[in-house]
View (cartoon, rainbow, N blue to C red):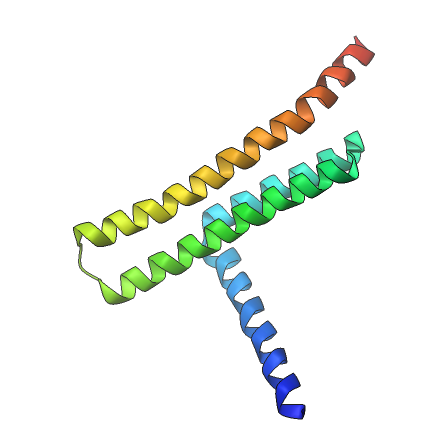
Length: 126
């Protein structure tokens, strides 16, 4: 049983190492983190509902996961195909496109949630 817990511990340690590597090496990941912090601040300021929090947190998670998958795919492609290859380029473009699609979806959902709050705020103070 001791071996079981040691393996779980190591799994979490490796996963946290991966998150740390993504944050340190990927400028877009830091951009996503900054955006997520802005969303959290806006969520607290506008007192969004529990359902809205779930949608916002879900969107943030999808964007973070897409960026991490993109980084993993690019890393493996760089390992197996260090020289330029059309298919390697296509795979990298597809992975980057997935991140862009996730970010656009998150932005649209953020606008759907926050625009009514912003309009109420503007109406109240004007």
